Length: 102
Image 1 (cartoon, rainbow, N blue to C red):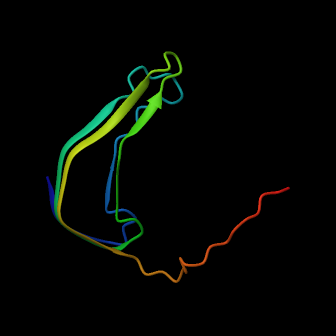
Image 2: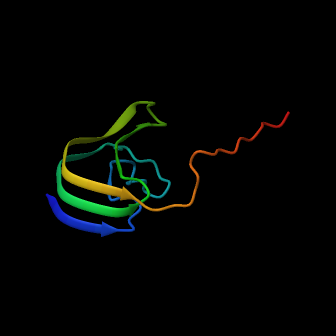
């Protein structure tokens, strides 16, 4: 359990990511699966955030067997969580469009 945390100027206060962290530096990895299970986060207040949270798993197709292996995140509980975005002068309403080369 994680609780009673105050943060300031943190890019992503809650970041839970089950992915291919066991890359083995370019060598083939037989078991790519992983699991994050049973996380409880309570009473967290963050200001100056860029992204309020990321909670993700992933999948991978192995080169040798072409089987899909999964990483999972399950049973995550978040209570009393506040994330306030950082102040920015960037106008998110204007987008620059690029034309593809002909």
